[in-house]
Structure formats: structure tokens, C-alpha cells
Image (cartoon, rainbow, N blue to C red; front, side):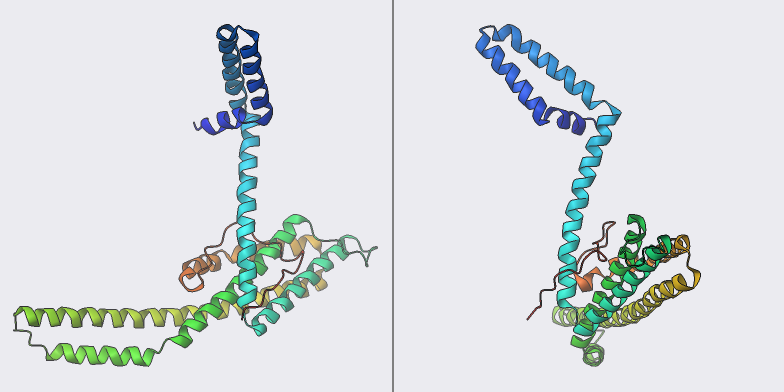
Amino acid sequence: MHLGKYFKAAFTNRWNLLLFCGGLGAALVSGSFDVLAPLVLAAEVGYVALLGTRPKFQKYVDAMRHQGERASRTESNERVLNHILSNLSEPARQRYQELRARCLELRQIAADLKQPSALDAAVPLDSYQSAGLDRLLWVYLRLLFTQHALGRFLQQTRPERIRAETQRTEARLKQVDAQDTSPHAQKIRRTLEDNLQTSQARLANYEKAQANHQFVELEIDRLENKIKSLAEMAVNRQEPEFISSQVDQVATSMVETEKTMNELDFATGIGPLDEEVPELLQRTPQIIEQN
């Protein structure tokens, strides 16, 4: 049992510290410190032990800790969000903004269906439904940035040069006499073999990046169509519960996509996805243009 964090929380509570220090101060000025101080310490130990073992207090401590962790992750994601929007190309940003507008439209449709008499009122979906749309947009935006990063890598890499270097190294390796066991010949052979392995690894990395780029492009189109389809079905079905269930279903279907993006962190450098996502529907983040 990890009771230490609960005891620490009970002891470091500002009101407890105030009373504890006040008790020691009173014992000090009373002239009977050797008698009263142990009583103050004993009362403090009893208080900390009693409060630290209460399930209700433990739940409160855990909730406050999780709240702090969520706030930290949210702040981190906000930085990532602004970094993504600042570095995306203008067409990609426009594509995201158009899809975000679709999500806002979907949210308003659900609100109008819940309150048909208040057509002009911008009543949002409940927080759970909005969180589902936020996650879809967050995944979509990360996909766009992953595509952008992989595209830059592919543009800067020349596979024909790597293949040519591989062929030259293979040819030079064949010229080395396999029967020559002299230190000089062995040194040359090891150098050429290492260079060949490096070239082969570079080519394999390029081909993997190319395949991932194609996959990400297809996932972008799939998610975009899913969200557009949700908006269209919402108009035709006019069932708020149906909208909510479909949003949740699409969000669940993106789990494998999120895992793939985490594996492509080497290309984006923005870290893995976590459970906290920015509130993309609530406001448009400020975009800082990069020179």
C-alpha cells in the first residue's frame, strides 16, 4: 500500500501546518515544552494517520493529482497544437479548418434537434460528445502533420543515389580477394560491409517512410469522409442519440491509427498521443507563422 503520499498530503495541508506550528510555538512559550511538545507531536501523528487512511481523503488526493497531470498534459498539447498549425502548409491548414467547420455544423445540428424551438441558440453537444469530436479533429490534425513531415523526408532523400551507392559498394566488395587474410584486406572488407549495411538500411528506411506516407494519406481521406458522413447522416436521421453513438464509434475506430502515429514519432518529433486532447471546437488557436 502506498500510504506515504496520503500521509504527506495530510501533513502538508496548510491548515494542518498552521495548527501544528502553532501548537509547537505555544508549547515553546509556555515554559513546559518538554511536556507539551510530545503531546502536540502525538496529536499530529494521530491526525495524519487518521486522515491519511480515510478512503474519502485518498480519493480527493488522487483526484487532485490527476487534475494536475491533466492540466500539464493539456498545456503540452496546446504547445503541440500551435506548433502543428504554425508549420503546416496553407492548403493543409485550410483543409483542417473546413473539416472543423463540418464538426461545428454537426454539433449545431444535434443541438437544434435537442431544442428545435431555439433554432438560433448555439447550444453545444454535451461534454462527452464534444470530446469525441475533439478527438477526431486531433487525430486528423496529427495525421496532416505526419503526412507533412514524411513528405519533407521523402523530398530530401534521393533513393536513386542510395541505390547507386549500394551497387558501387557491392562491386568494390567483390573486388576484394576473399582468400586474402591480411589485416589490411580484412580492414577494407569490414569497412565496405559496414557501408553496404548502412546503405541498405537507408534504403529500407526510405521505402518504409514511403509506405507510411501512403497509409497516412489514405487515413486522412478515410477520417475526412467519416466526419463528413456523420454530418450528412445527422441531417437525414435527425436523432441526437444516433449522432452521439456514431461519433463514439468513429473515435474508437481510430485507435490503431493513433498507435501508428505514435510509431511515426521519429518523423514528427512531437511525442506520442495521450488521453488529453485540446478543445478544438471551443476556439480557434492562434497561429504563429513560421518564417
